[in-house]
Amino acid sequence: MVENNELRKVGLKVTLPRVKILQILDTAAQRHMSAEDVYKALMDAGEDVGLATVYRVLTQFEAAGLVERHNFDGGHAVFELSDGEHHDHMINVDSGEVIEFIDLEIERRQKAIAAEHGFDLVDHKMVLYVSKRK
Ligand SMILES: [Zn+2]
Image (cartoon, rainbow, N blue to C red; front, side, top):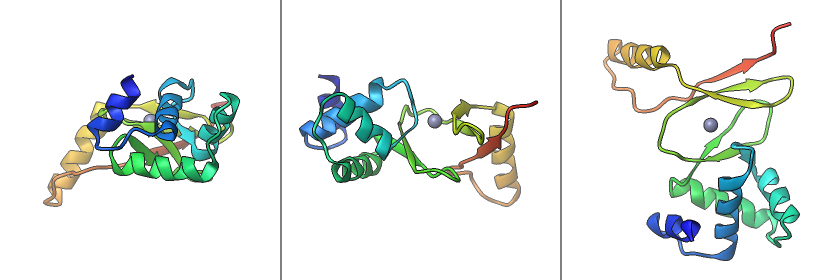
């Protein structure tokens, strides 16, 4: 199974909860999920995995670089599978919806600003909080 290989590749032992949680993250319509979302999806699928286990496994996945954790304002931490590609996020403050975007001009400007201060840009997180235009 794909999940088993993914786990082995990052040095994690293949356990049932890890495989199930990875499957959920991989197949859910929602790309950004809180631990509670994952837990609910597991319950809906008839899987008996406790919330504490979900938290632990997600933390292990994060440490292994399998998932990224985001702490958006006004919500739970959400997790998404790392695809190795950088992107930024917009949060609809009315609905909580998470929208992904990438803007090459912004990326370029951030590197330039860091360089102007004598730095190489190592990483960045940018979140826009938005509301639908009336
Ligand atoms: Zn994302």
